[in-house]
Image: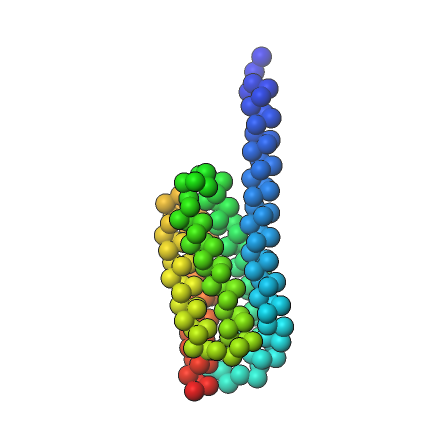
Length: 171
């Protein structure tokens, strides 16, 4: 008789199902952050268009597609880490991953709803610090997970520069 023992196949299917459920949970968390941010700033598009912006500011229609892809990469990066090591071994990684999502969520209402550009800039700087730490921690377990966050980090850095420019133009 060849092949794996009967119990091993069942464990493998269970592990695969559990891994898929974890990925779906992480995607749900990331898209919930996006939805909550959207609810917090329902008029963000028109607010953005009404702002005095630098010439290098992107058009408002670009944000939706970019963030849709970025939230997926944020979820997949965490999934790559969590499927390789037990949660007990990656607590710091999860804390910083959660912190960057919390700062991400806080930015939209600070910037668009409250019009607090300076406070939003502080928030996005804290987001970048949490994201950089997340990337460094993720790299220990999965270099691919860390690399998946590079586009997010670059877009967030660009958004921070745009936030700063708008804050200065508003002053």
